[in-house]
Length: 294
Image (cartoon, rainbow, N blue to C red; front, side, top):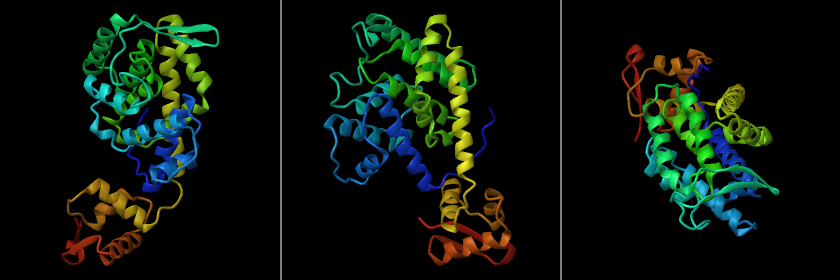
C-alpha cells in the first residue's frame, strides 16, 4: 500500500474523530449517536445513560491529544487505558492478574492466556513492535491481533487495541489520526470478530492482517474521495499553516502544496490572508515571501 500526503480540512478532521469515537464505542455496546457526542464535545448537556456518557467523555479526552502517547512504551499504553476506562472499572491502567474468557451467549469464544503470563507476553509484544523489521502497516495489524489475543486488561481491550493500532500507524503516517478506520470496522463488525476467531483457530494472524489491511485501504479511499469537494481559500491557508509552521514561504511553495489551483487563485488566497492579518508579507514581485503571524 502506497500512502500519500493528505490534507484534511479542520471540519472533516472533527467529523472523522467523532465518527471514530462513536463507532469504537458502539462496537462495545455504547448507545450515543454522533449528534450526542458532538454535543458533549461542545460541553452541552444530553440525556443518556451515565455509563455511556462517561465512556464518551473518557474517549474524547484520549482522542483530543493522541500525540502525547508513545506507541512503543508500555507505560503509555497503561496510561491511555487508565484514561479510557476511568471510573468504569477497578484498576484501570493495570494489567490483569486473573484468568479470563470471552463469552458469547453460552459459549466461550476465546480463553485468554493466564493472568500470570500477561506481563511477559506484553513485554514480548512491545519488543516486537520496537525491534522487528516488518513494515509498520504489518506491525500495526499484528499488534492489534496479538493484543486482542492476550486480552491484557479486565475490560476495554477492544477499544484499546484499535486505538493502539492507530497510534502505531501515526508514527509514519500522521494522516491515520483522522481516518475513519473505526467506522469501517463497525460496518464490518461481524467479519472483524470472525477474522479474530479464524486467526485464533489456525494460530496465525494472517486472516486478521488481510482483513485490517483492506479496512485501512478503504479508509484512505474514502478520505481521498471526500477531498474531491472544493476547498475554499480559508481551508487552504490553514491547512498550509499546519504544514509550513513558522517558516517563510513563497507563492511557488504554496502552489506546490495545492497543485489543483491556478497561480492567480494562489495569489488571491495569499492576498486574502494578508488582509485578514493571518500572513505577513515581505519583499516585492519574485522576491515576495510570506510567514504566518504567531
